[in-house]
Image (cartoon, rainbow, N blue to C red; front, top):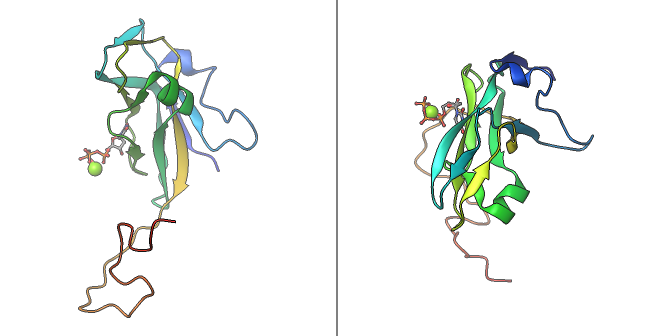
Length: 148
Ligand SMILES: O=c1ccn([C@H]2C[C@H](O)[C@@H](COP(=O)(O)OP(=O)(O)OP(=O)(O)O)O2)c(=O)[nH]1
Ligand SMILES: [Mg+2]
């Protein structure tokens, strides 16, 4: 699949997001900042990525997810937990970087900060009913199937 991309920061021209291995699901997004950015404990900041994408087809969306190394080792995750990029969004991809740890973290310019995953989407319509046909689960949830 090919996606239209605009390079908004010239530094991104030769380092467009790429799949690190043939089996990778995520494209790493870089922090297009001019100077190191210090994130104090529990601080968050919107970080530009230097690119814009236009998925166009409503059958797709993109999700911004944390990188596991940064998230687990340094507590750098996303202020919105997951970023959802609509197929008609044409603005710069932005990453809400949140330092959920108790230690300050310095983000370096062009450091890989988060990852973008392209996913298929179904746009559903609602069919209003008064009753559902019985299912095995019914209204059970929140542990209703037991602990083990
Ligand atoms: O981490 C993110 C999340 C969103 N976006 C962009 C793409 C998305 O299509 C748009 C709107 O996002 P969303 O619908 O999640 O935000 P909203 O608060 O509902 O804003 P809006 O009223 O513009 O839809 O913002 C990003 O660049 N990064
Ligand atoms: Mg919205």
